[in-house]
Length: 287
Image (tube, rainbow, N blue to C red; front, side, top):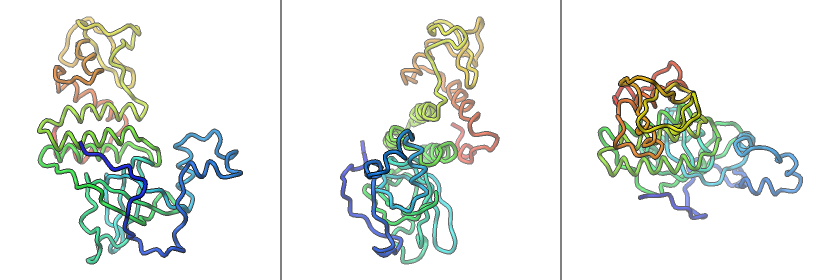
């Protein structure tokens, strides 16, 4: 399974054309916290709030491991990339001249390509200052490609900005490994959807009855209510989950779980967060 290199020093290439005087000194969160006089102003801030503060400061970020979630053209030759990064969560950068004939990154800033980059800027929209391609792109085709694009759209729509989600980034890398190496990626996508719900604070409890707080029983049937959980039912219905299925989902063992019921469950839960605007990728793939 492929993973980004964690080497501290990586040779990266400038794409912005900034001079040395125009670039600010790179610094880490730890350096800021240890600066004399800064501790009192930083005490009590959660990490995501600290990154929001950093987003408004004119400092260059450390190198970030990243993937492109979404891109759009900007002015004559530039593009804006919406990124998922290991170190800072989701944020956007301008890549100046990326579409010019002489650009070395032209056509290379694609989804599922591991990137290592630096960025600079006072606002939430950063300017890319350096970029490297440490590994080859993931080779996704057919349904696996559509599943990958679906996940990218979910992350683009649901993740906040500058909220570090290192564990979710690792789950994303694992998902790409699975999509590249297997023809059956839908189960891994369902697991990722459940993990995403957990990261967003809407994780589903598959082990306890939401009505009685008692443990789920293998032979009983349960009805799912969005943002509440599972309630034990006296009868049976094709939309109801058997307790044994719920426990399998809790253990991420999906082989014995009805695919349609699980798809409807994640679709309802994510739909409550997505609102009325449908996902474009879902129109391409009915999974």
